[in-house]
Length: 289
Image (tube, rainbow, N blue to C red; front, side, top):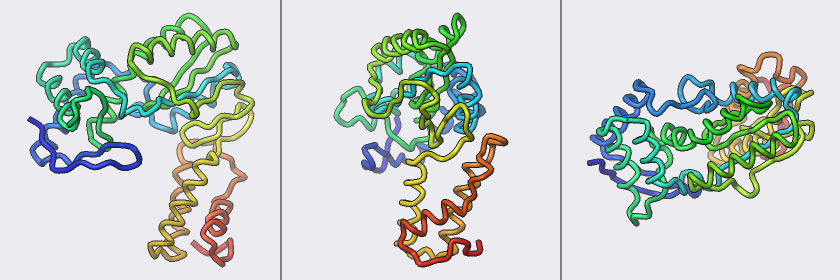
């Protein structure tokens, strides 16, 4: 049986420090599920290994915005905290996952559930991202079925996803189907983290601003997080060179893998200047890296 050495909460998520023998079992289960490829995880879900991640997601969406100009972006409300154990158990059982692996998954969910609520999953565990991808696989299937019959497309990273359509009517139809599936999964979309409208209004997705006629660039939220993390580094004693390197690596990550979609006019000096201003530092903007 899985056991843990400690449990704590941070940023609204529950974390667990698993005992050493349990860590080996959890890692082995994750690898077995990945090798067996059951349940099948759609290519539309990009947060699992080999499916492209954040960069594939934003490039995929950007390439389709002109042909599919009506978009809806959603985030699941308190995703990990509201996942229903019985629903996930049904999904993996229906997918004919071997009973031994099903048993480990059930313990992974139940052991930290000290109040026996039958809901919720720990964050930070090596198995959690994979189970999170599996849980929403019925949504992938439902929207992909629409894609086969009409001008609709879709991509998902964990619980953050975008639906694109050629017309407003098709988008509404896809959203209605989405709500049906989420009701069956006992989930709700976040009331604030959403966007529905024309792509030309610009949409934040996975830290980028998406617009059909513009280059990809970091969203205001991403820039704010950059400045906040730099400020914390400064408060913990990081010198100016350390902060400059942090901004440099942050900028490299944002531009890598985007090719011609990255804005060639936006230099990292712009973000370094924002960090200087946010931290209240008296430094030249062109401080050598």
